Length: 234
Ligand SMILES: [Zn+2]
Image (cartoon, rainbow, N blue to C red):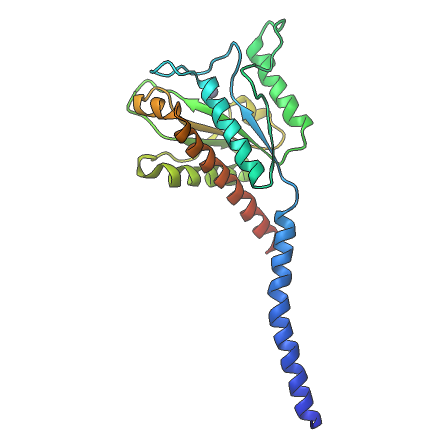
C-alpha cells in the first residue's frame, strides 16, 4: 500500500471508529446519570384523626391517598427508584398528646423531608369544591420554584395522558400550602381528583383508577428525571 493510500485508509478507520464510539460514550454517560440513585419521598396526605376531605359517596381522602401512594411506591421501586412514604398505615404523624395535632403532623412531615435525603417530595391529596360538576387532577408547586414547576408539569402531562380529554386542569403555583412553603427540597402536591364530583369520587375508590392515577404520577416523575439528566448533559 502506498503511503497516501495508507493514510486515507487509516483516516477512514478512525472516522468509522469515532462514529461508532462517540454516540456509545454519550449513551453511557446518560445511562450513568440516569442510574444515579434517586429517592422520592411520597407524602401521604392526612391520616388517623384527620380524614381530609369526605367524598359525596362517604369515601375518606386519607384512605384514597394511602392506596394511591402504596401503588406509586411499588411502581417507582419497579423503575429502580427508592420511594419512601411519610405513613404506610392509617396513622397521622402527630402524638396523641399534641394539643394542635394538625400542626404537629405537618411539622413532623417537614422534619421527615429534612431527615431523608430525598431528591423530590410528591404529596398525594384529593380535592373538593362547592360545585359538584368540577373534576380532574391538578398539580401544585411553590410559586418561585422553577424545578417544582417542571416536576408539576411533568406529572400534569402524565395525568392528561391517562385521564384524556376530561382532564382540563393545568398546573398551579401556590405560596401558602404548608408543605410547599416549608419543604427544603423540590416539592409538589398532586390533587388527584374531586371527591365532591360523584363520578370521580366513585372512580377514586376503585383499584383500577387508583392504579391509573399512580401510573400517571410515576410516568411524570420518570420523565422529570430523564429531562433533568438530559439538560445536565447538554
Ligand atoms: Zn388533602
